[in-house]
Length: 303
Image (cartoon, rainbow, N blue to C red; front, side):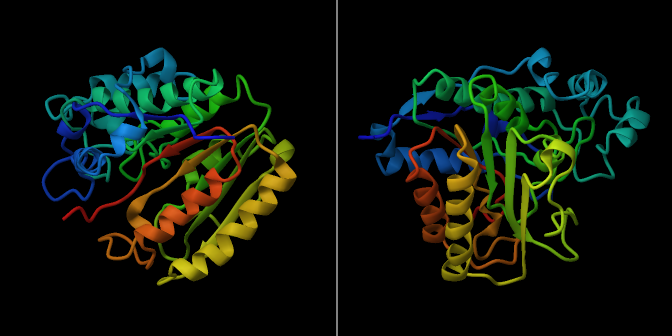
């Protein structure tokens, strides 16, 4: 394959959403990343797109309709009236997923970017699609979790499955990709592979013994790690595992979640990966020349 056709999704409305004072998740980080894309001239090598806003019907391809309706109604003004539902769906004042202004719009934008990327890959319009606002891997079918409300990754993979027999999901965020693993735990059409900190660390899942079940047995791969791992050690693990999976599983498309909280100095992380180490992971996955959707995720030290 010659030069890759790369699509990049960004909407200037996404960074304007605000989780609230003191909350580590800052959507404005998407704006900072976008400014780097512009400042370094990277945009000259990309096709840039504004994502569509994913509809409730699109979200319902995975998420529970009652939960979606709750997210649509949720705001600081309705928080008191929705307190019982908020408790049921693990959101609100006492959870790590607050009910902020424009919450459904925020979800629509980041989900839309990931779905749009999957559609472009399906139709051969792009070889690589990038949505830094996506990658919210903790959201469950009917539950908010870990700053995530709607699971754009699951929605994108479901879109990819319309055209591809097998999809590989790779997660290099410091936190285990539990929401995506849970969604595809019983199928062999999606293999999930997560490299993450394990042991007294959110979300507490991702044991090496968790390998899938039913038709999905052996199609879940977890690689739990300890504090302080650096580029060299991480890549010595990452490359042979991904090489073996690509050789044996032979996916038609790959989704790579690049949560930046596995980088050194992150306020919620404890790994010592550098930007180069992260980049080497992307470069290695890219080398297989398989349709590739690259997403964001964690990352909480923006200064």
